[in-house]
Image (cartoon, rainbow, N blue to C red; front, side, top):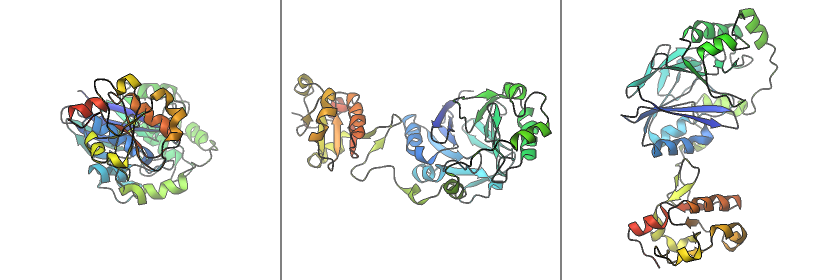
Length: 353
């Protein structure tokens, strides 16, 4: 059965976020979203023309704040997390065996406590894949030294639940600190150095009680926020800048539509980054635009006013997107790319010189 699947990453906390969607109905779910990447995730969902139905958290995280509440405010999706997590503010309190459906697909919640009381593994379409959170990791397992951690309980969760899945079931964890992206039940049952092979419960408990790891840096802020499903003060803010209706793209660039730029041109600095012959060529240029070719932009950025918003322009929106990057590196905060460039400008019949 076809599936839209994306594995996204937060380098700061080494967290994986998973986007899954039905290609026919366009219904989507997002597993373990990260607060700082909510704009990225929303942009990807919009660009793929999906409809986010649910955010799912595998547990109450200690190393990052979930993006669940922010995404709910922006998209109207529903938040689901374990009933045993102690969290409030969710729309669905999941229990063992509950199913979350999106189109023709389903994720089954299986309780796998031990890292925390509320840890859940999500099984895709029976046992096609398992999103194991911080229970089973790639050649590792979630720590058990804080937040209701219990190595005996985690051992039973892995052995009695996850390791009972078919060998070919893919494993997708919530974290990996070495850049490993996925594994399988068979691999981990054979090769996991903490719980695989001939290792028994005493071996596992002894290993886990002697990790001696520092606590996560964001723990004191993350846990209270995640007990409210990420509902912190800024989570209801709209994903726009104050100076205009910007649209953030999955490429990490703010864009703005030509019609709005035409209506507000007097308040903007419009920077055309094409070459001089293009500026006066067949497509023309926006009447108030100033010409600064892309190759000259880093050197000439000082000519621009840091307090007035800047819109970069080129033929199609490609080179001007790099112009946004260069200006942001130079310290300009109010910068956006003209969506579609001069091609879109001319197509919509807007004035040119």
